[in-house]
Length: 233
Image (cartoon, rainbow, N blue to C red; front, side):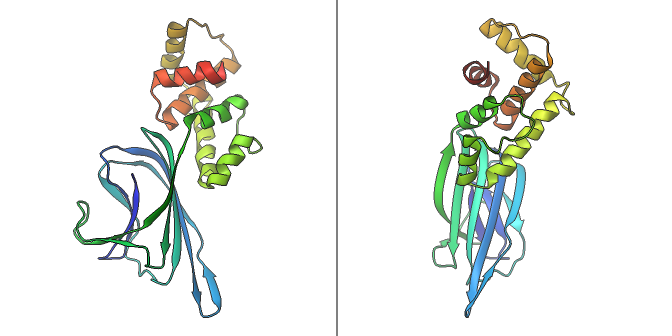
């Protein structure tokens, strides 16, 4: 799922979602370098965010570029799907490892597909446990070992987690503070697990964080309730 391709018509760089399943929280980064004579040139990395990349669609990242075929590029994409959190990495070694596809259902012309170099699935529990380790933290805990481990896997996790904590704050005291999803989550865990949450600022923060996690990680309510009982309560 998710591919980086270059259209041969305009040399436009695209991110393709060939499956029928939508993916959310798409973070991507790419950068490259080339050598001319004895001089090494490094291109500034480009980072982007896509809220939702719908199934059987693609996003144009750069349009009508004259790609230098002597360049090497590295690409990373981090996203949330039904299977969990996925981190994929790709590499273009000049044009030596490109796959030519003459017919593609989304393009009227032939394309080059960039080679995938790694595909990792990050456990949802890692993100849940990171938040649970300091449930009242207002910012991503950069000193937490789980945080450091995720950042080592990809710097994209920095933006991913910063946005997660901003979302948590929005459910606590921001634009989503009156969301019905907070009531639905509270009612579910109290009725299903027979617990009674106290009316306090601490409980309000916990519920806000759980709902934000549920939304950002695309978790069904019963699954988030299970995580709440295992890691947070």
